[in-house]
Length: 437
Image 1: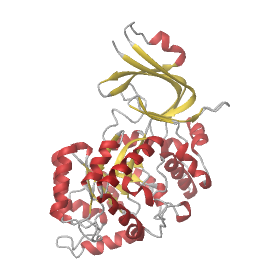
Image 2: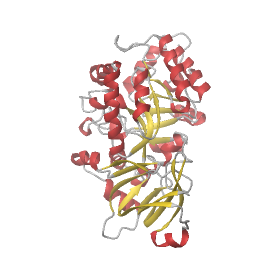
Image 3: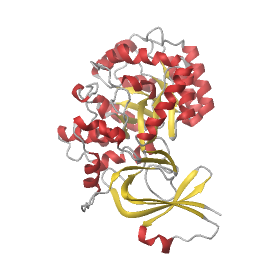
């Protein structure tokens, strides 16, 4: 006896930056396994009865979404779940926003009851916006990681931020205590854990170096911030050039390199202001960048005004990158909003090849690949888990291309961005519905 689930819908299946298959009136047939439903076949709806054979003992659930459009679930590879309520706070610049709003709010997570309550509400918002995985930052407190793992539904890597210098007293950690937490959580969660220096400004080099050894031992990820603003770069270089062993450091990336932070399981948030040499080094080490267009957007677009990541340069140097919301620097958790902003900002800059196909790919399959789960999730392929979201109705008029359909479903004016929060109608993770409006 086997349990099957068949989804009837119109599929947008991202393959690359330039290719997304539009499969109209299609069926995805999945079979239940130990860890959820996996895709065993995809075919036109009209061919299901001829191609898919079952026995009398098999149990089949059919879900008719024939008038809807579905995509794979989204991966958000850089966000702070403990910053959910500062996303709309004044954002004069990055460092002032952190000092005046973000850090005081994160201090609340010292209270475990507060963390539990917030984790439950944030989990619902993730599912509501179609996010089924990503790379997430907690607060300095170990239970901010534990509560997120307890509640989040999906493929997440999560880490507690490390703050051992240049931090307010109420968040400042003793390096020895910080490393103890890293060791305990890495041992407990292994490849789902991320050793997480907030950034080099707040984390001393010995702690980062020791943390990287622990991450390597347990197969954990590493995540941090890199070159988000020019002021940040100037500040971090001034700090490190006064630290023994770093007097001659020339770039922000070099600081992390000397601390053994770079590598194929490392995700750098932002990476806006990078030299050619830095991009080359990131590529050589397999380090990825999480591009956060809504967070880095101009103030009038509710961002921090940091600038725009040059994805074309990154591509030339073969640096791996995906999209991310950067809640709470970003104003909305929705990856649809992130996709919309990515296309809009780049078209304004003159990057005519920026497309919704590219944005979807960098929010699904490429995001999954960076998390090292691209073989089991990220798009609709046989053998992968059945992860999908309903993003809207299939237009009644004939639409012949994926780009045209994505543009119709995603493109929004700035004043209408709030609509993204409620656009997702259904989210399924491994075949099980985790949100249904």
